[in-house]
Image (cartoon, rainbow, N blue to C red):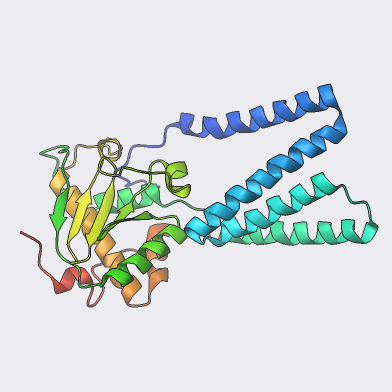
Length: 279
């Protein structure tokens, strides 16, 4: 994040869980190898890779993110290699070429930010226009201006946000809820059953827009920002992004979140320009 970020810095302990997971994985494989031999290690690794391939297939279906498709291919190849143990030289060469090509694709996708989560970027961008530091956290959503986008367009917008790991869409009757995810495994695996205590922006079939910021996200800010002003800013940010999407300029959303292009105002004919704030 930039130096002018209104968010508190990331706690270094947050990176510890990934390291712990990697160490546990290595210890399990070492234990299997010591107790049961190299052949069984290959079988166990193959089963784990196969489970990983299944997981990444589900994540790709959920988000349609190209990065998960590449990881699905890589995990599937590694599972096939460990479970079949083929030795034909042509097959081995072909396997190595495809794995190297898949790794190259993954590297390119990483450089293009396809694995990047925009959780903190959304929260920080929402806070930038907020000047008030009175009237702190309030556990209630805020009703904003209506959007003229129809419900089909809103659902397509939600799919775009999920594909780019910006927010996760949930349909609840005639409402589309876009959750700014703090519990990514829940949203990636489509396991969230309740969203009322999360940070979200919701639209109903009549165009009504509702915004809520959860206490956990609110406490990530350095100051106690005025809650209504912060909610209003987050909602309007998403309405501006919706305007870009409806204008067939979705790349501008990613440019602004990556910091390569600053948000200098509402796009022409954006939903938030067409309507007034809800009473």
